[in-house]
Length: 149
Image (cartoon, rainbow, N blue to C red):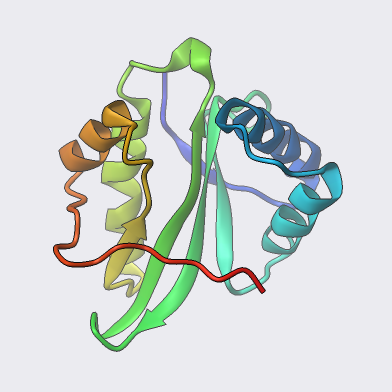
């Protein structure tokens, strides 16, 4: 199984939305078709704040990853956030997510990204092990906080 990454394009919208719906259902996230489309479609159309990558073959992807872009004075430039990462359940445990989280940051660094962040459920020890294995580290004295607008 290959973790080849392909930048998703407008013609991949239905495929990406199906994967996002599966991820949101699995995670118990309350989102509508319209909400998911509003979050994904601009990125596929070249919105400068992020990118969606299909994992595996574009005709039958095995997952996706969304990277959003930001700026950090602390890290001295562009940073990013792994907004969503999903691998189909049938192919999990084969090192695909490890490969994605090892190789994609290298490409992002080459493009000038200084740091890549993500969040993980405090109870999801499997995901935490994956992120530690791919060199993500918890930030001492920091917690992610959110204000919905």
